[in-house]
Image (cartoon, rainbow, N blue to C red):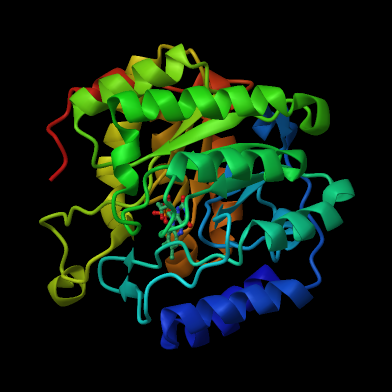
Length: 363
Ligand SMILES: Cc1cc2nc3c(=O)[nH]c(=O)nc-3n(C[C@H](O)[C@H](O)[C@H](O)COP(=O)(O)O)c2cc1C
């Protein structure tokens, strides 16, 4: 099924406008007959109190409205993060708002949190609640909200009962002012309220791990603050990173690169991996990290783990490499375990972090 899809459907999808191709893919997944592959137990990990069958997740933005989480789990992802979900439905920015940089294997998007809203996502996740598997929910504020912190609080109250974990997304570049919430007192106040809310809903929702997803464009001084606050407020983990507003010098498709929005895919890899390593050395093992940004091979996934990621996520790499990428990464991780004579991936986590932080800053 996956080979069929990659050989026949993907060339067609690549010829379509990116958002139409995406809508078609979601619809195909709704009807696909998939049998989950059995994962090698050496890929399993227990983190945040959750049992992951393998460490590879699908990043948010792919299934924003929780239409196909079970199909994604059956494809072999170890976890799915749906969203970003906003409290009220909103349309996002005008189209076109997703652009492929074909030669660079990158994507620029300025979707702007197009979301069916929390009630729709709640109903879908409640309907599959017994199906098992790890399905996290990424939450964000409505663009026109007068109290963005209140939006996050409301979303946790509403969605924690159906979420394996919640990700507080403060790092989308496409909602004006959102990323300001990553700074100082604003972040401290927000995370204090987020954690208090999560604790308050434990009787209805059980313990829901709360993660923070950060931008790769933070300065290292800001990162010091973010990690310090995250540790002081006892959040459960950090996801590094969202898309970048920077444009690496090596980009070849300069015309598309001029589009405003967040850049993902291969051109993001170096910066996101550097920020991951920088986060890892600051976190000092206080909580796990999820590495995301530009993973398009087994080698790239392994580099994220060695830079400090307990888990990884991908999105753009699937567009350019196809669904076969997932099996390729699993095989590469198992080969590396054998090569290193290691029993678990956790033995490899962060082994290169210090070395990565000593490299020249990625351009
Ligand atoms: C089309 C598109 C939509 C995205 N939407 C979201 C989103 O709603 N919430 C979010 O936290 N990240 C979103 N992202 C960012 C991804 O989750 C991920 O952090 C980023 O793309 C880097 O990973 P990648 O290089 O593997 O794509 C989106 C990315 C793309 C390409």
